[in-house]
Image 1: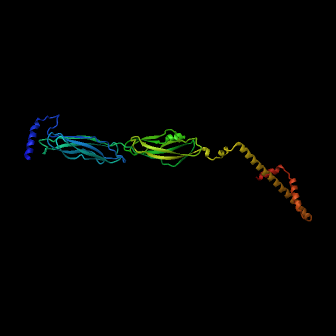
Image 2: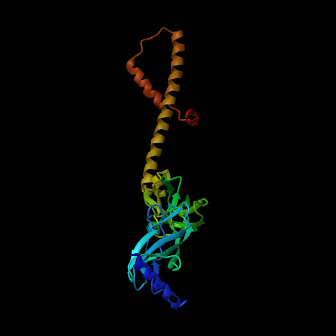
Image 3: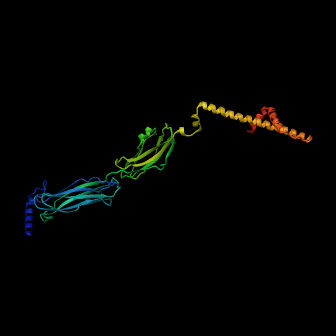
Length: 363
């Protein structure tokens, strides 16, 4: 066995001086390394997956099997890793072998991160002959960069989500903020998802119908305001919803952040005011009700005057009778005469102006 190896080695050494110096592969032993470029790595919390890259090594020798060693240089540090770019493979002449390199990394890292790497394929043995000197080792390499994909994530904040109560035709406003939770500078935008339905219902918007702001990673917007004018043509109280949605312009596939604000619009016709009730009564009815009320008031005034005059007359007569009793012997009064006297009193009533004045003063 040793004699056969030695013979092959001597033949190889003999032919080496006759090989072209450049522009051709070694006909005795050699290797070729090719790899697919790695795709960007998605580091979003919801879509993270490691990235795989397939590499192929080929024994370019015309005769003899070769042992090929795979090594690498990698600068991933603590936030990324590369696995599978090491090992040894035995490949026959003219044959190839595949291996898979896997990249992994921490989620939520900035998209500005990138990781350079290089993979080496080296022939360490040909036809069971270790290669070093006098036969130099043959090698090939592949270099590339792993990029981090941009992803979007937003958060909408509306502190007051209670029902907004507004009178028809009046203006009201919604205050809101939003944050960039993605891994790159992003223009976050907030729209009203059902704005077309609201416009059909009679709502209108004062100023912009949406708000947006460029935000760095982790940054929160300034306080924004959307002014809205409630519909004026409302016959009774009507309830609506404002569907606010925040989205990322970097990543259309990113989940939206949504908040719904109830709005209750009250008609001015249904406010229950006194004028509103009167307006529903006809003019003829008002005249009739006024005449009845006036008649009732006049009747009470007349009864008051009559009663007051009778009391004064009775008081005067009682005073005269008391004086007569003191001078004369008392007589038994006749009941029938009392009734006659009462009607006589009515005949003697003096409807003077001052009686009405006194009555009005009492009221």
